[in-house]
Length: 175
Image: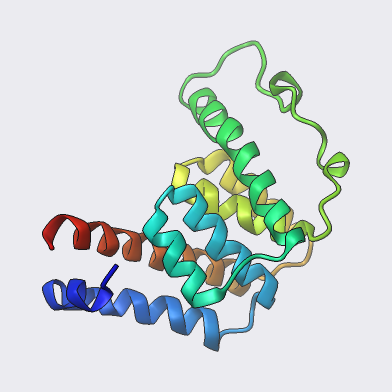
């Protein structure tokens, strides 16, 4: 992976790398742990080894508790994002609940950082276009006193990483 080579082909994408780095390092609306969770959740949901390598180099590895958050959110959003988006497209008179998906209640998951979990879920839902879940998890964050500026910071981290993923893909294609 040679980002400099890609930037030579498409120099304006440096703006997105700068957006990620500045949003991650210079803003403190999100806790350090939640910024790392958002970055990793985005990379995992993107299913891009190159983006995962980029995240490792920029933010480091996940702690064990944060790894559990990202893995749990990824697993649950893989089920709920397509299910609830399809139900949103066409209403049915059956199902439509977490129970119908055999999902354990959140309190049974033993997640230490509930805000981190919800931030991971919004990051993954953005990638998966799971906007029903996205809205639900934003509501949970707001109910837990998270401010719009923190949620916006998370969303900008995800957006910048989407652009970086594209840059890394372009690098493979056009090298």
